[in-house]
Every structure is written in structure tokens, then in C-alpha cells.
Amino acid sequence: MPDATGKLNFYVPRKKRPFDVSRLAFILLGLGLFFWLLLLEPLPDAVDPAGRHFPLSREGKAAIALFLLAGTWWIFEVIPVGVTSLTIGVIQAVFLIRPAKAAFNDFMDPSVLFIFGSLVIGMAFTKVGLTKRLAYKMLTIVGERTSMIYLGCFLVTAALTHLMAHTAVAATMFPILMAIYTLYGEGNKPTRFGKGLFIGMAFVAGAGSMVTLLGAARGAVAIGFFNDIVSRDISFFELSYYMLPVGWLLVLLCWVLMMIVFRPEKARIPGLREKARRLYREAGPLSRREIFVGLVVLAVILTLSLKSFVPAIASVDKSSIVLLSTIIFFLFKILTVKELEDMPWNIILLFAGAMSIGFCLWDTGAASWLAINWLAMFEEANWFLFVMAMSFFVMIMTNFIMNVAAIAISLPVALVIAPYLGVAPEVILFASLTVSACPFLLLVGAAPNAIAYDSRQFTAGQFFMVGIPGSLLLMAVVALAVAIIWPFMNMPVTSGAAP
Image 1 (cartoon, rainbow, N blue to C red):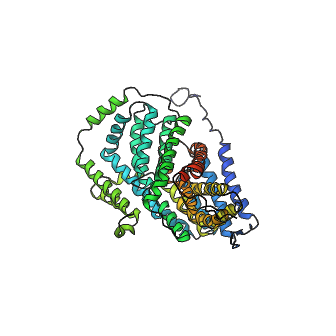
Image 2 (image 1 turned 90 degrees about the vertical axis):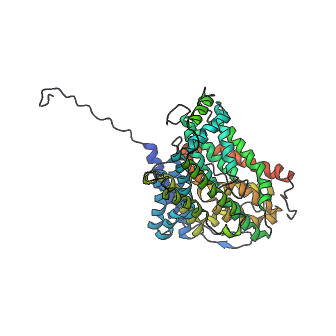
Image 3 (image 1 turned 45 degrees about the vertical axis):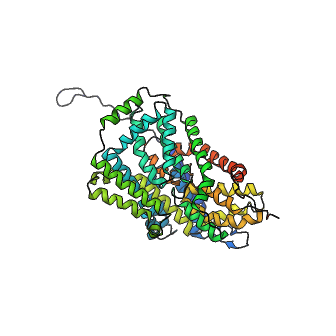
């Protein structure tokens, strides 16, 4: 029809978005699992080898139901992962699983604030230009072959986790990898190379962190439990002696896995080494701001490392040390309010929700009930099968809840059952530490997973799918360590006490 000016206007109907049936199906699946278990009749008690009964309370059953809902929504990403985390807190409060104060206090747990501070360090690196400088230097060393870029990035990531917490390493490496990825020449769009680069970084951050007590808190917690139950201490160097070959074998296998699953579209990036050298030269000498940020971060790393050796600072929380650097960066105007507004809050909420569901399973007794029921199934099994079953349980649990909690609920039960099967306690400890370092299935399993996700190179579902062969490799390495590597290194794996 003609309008007021006499021109003809043609109405073009707006295209309707296709209805996302699969998204609705997974939303309903999560809700269905939640209400099915919530309304189910009370489940039988768990019974440990000593005959003690562990009933599953209404709150515990509801916590497992919430665990299923959150896992489904996280894997299939039906809503933003951070919003799923908020749902965890809301459901705990609405369905009276835990008081709202307890459910939401976990969102500001010191571990969550440690991640926040680690991300700020990465932002400071990027702001002053250290990120690009380090990326260019790395590329001049590893060259133009994308397979070697993978390997070089993974080796540096794993090596750093021997000296500092894997969360801080991931936050530091993330902007460096982003700078490297921009030179791949595909803009910001997802590619196989991008997926392999960032997922591989998350995987090797976990694998490397098992080698020393500095890589994560799980080692110190597990050794504490071990000492309380077995009355034997494990030294810093004894742990590293047994974990070094296993950790580095996993690092190399993760590189092979990324090359198979995410073989880069380009075998080489012609001219990359020369371009990196030119850009490094153009960056000029280190600026005062770069030196300042580098010294602050070095001080943080040294302080976190010395916590394990200096009694005077052993009780200082690691989060406060990292957050002190955040305050310094803002005091000296390295960062401004703009960087604070640009924080990846979706990632921070993701990990906050993981803390909340972990504490929920712990506080309600649901985690202990699950551990006792699972391990009791293998109390008359062959010793090797028992160790592998225990390892499998810790691996699955550490993908959903804190690895510290996964160890805390399973290690005491496993150490009680072990003597009946003739299993040495040392192999229980080290197998648990190996699998708890490598939550390859879910983003919420570890902070490096969540940090890598911020690259927008992959979805939660894609991470889960590559995590399946990754987890199978992990279990194969544990089996190899238990059967061959650790016995060869003179670790006792059987106690000779089996009937």
C-alpha cells in the first residue's frame, strides 16, 4: 500500500525463531530428576564395614536431587552456567534443604574470592602489556607448527603449577593464550585450535598440579586425613617423587588427546615466528608498570609457595594474599572501575555454585552416604578392583563438588576398608590425589575449567564430550601407576593382610 508520501511499502513478515525443543527437553529432564528423587520414598541406610548405619535424611535426599538437576543443566547449558549456580542457592532455600544464609554464604567462600583475585592478576597482566610480551616470546621459542604451540603452552602451564596454585596459573596463562590465539588469524570465532588450546590448558593445569603440594590445597588436606587415620606423615618430597611420573605422563597424554580430538585446521602458521619476534621488538623495553605488576605477582607467588614451609605464614589464608594484590593494583591505578565491571561474573558465579552444591552434599550427609554405599559394594573385591572403584568414585565426585570434599568423604572410608582387602594405605592416598586433580568432565570441577570456558571457544557440552576420553585416559594412567609405576618406585600397594 502507498504511505502518506505516495511510496509503496512492502510488509516483510519477521522470521520466527525455531523453537528449541532440545533445550526444553533438558530443562524438563533436570526438573524431572529433581522432583522424582525428592518425592521418592526414603532410601535405605548406608552401612560401613564396621556395621555403622548412615541414614539419608530428607535434606540429604534433596541435596542429591539438586545435584542431578544442576549437573544436567550445567552439561547441556540450558541457561547461562552462572544462572544455574544461582538456581542451586535458590532451591536450597525454597525447598528447605539448607538455610538461605548457609546456601548463599558459600557464594563468597574464600576459594571463590581466590578465583576472583586470580582473574584480576590476569587482567593486570593484560592491561600493562605483559601478556602480549610473554605470548610473543613463547611463540619465538615454539615456532610455527600448531602442534608445537599446543605442546609449548601445555608444558609451561604444567610447570607453573609446580610452583603456584593451578587456579592462579590458569588465570595467568589465559590472557597469554588469548594473545596467541589472535595470531592464528581466525578472529574470535571458535575453531578446533581454539578448543584444543583452552581445554588442553585446563586439563594440564590439573595434571601438573598433582606433582607438588603447591599446586592445590587438596594434597595437604589428603595428607592430613592420611596422617590422622594411618599415623604416618607424607613429606613434600615423597609426594612429588611418586606423583612426578604420573603427572607428566598425563600432561603428555592430554597433548596427544588434543591433537587427536582438536587437530588444528592449520598445521603451520607461516611467518608466525618472525612476526612474533617483530612484535616483541616493537614492544620495546619493559615499562615501569610492567615491572611493578611483575614484582607484585612474583611476591604473591613466593608468599603462596612459602606457606608450606614457613610456620609464621602457614595460617594466612591464600585468598587474602591474592586479594592483597587486587587492592594494590587499584591503589596504584593499574586497574580502574572499568576492569571491575568487565570481570567475567558468569565464571565466578559458576564456581560459586559449585562450592554451594559441594557444601550442601557435605552438610546434609548425602556425600558420605554416597561414598559408603559405593565403596561397600567392593569390600570383598580384588584389591586392584577396589582401588580402581575408589578412584572412579573420587573422579566422578570431584567433577561436581570440591576435590577437597571428594577426598574428605571417600578417603576415610577407603582407608577403613583397605586393610580387609590387603591394600596398602599409600596407594589409596596417591590414587585419590591423582584422580581428584583431573576433573575433565564438568566446568564446575575446577577453576581452570571455568577460566578456560571464558574464551568462548567451546560449550559446556563440548567440554563434557572431550572429557569422556580424557577421563578414560586418566583411569588408564591410574591403573598403570597402581600396577606398574608405583611398585617399580618401591611404593607398597598391598599390605598382605587380606584373608
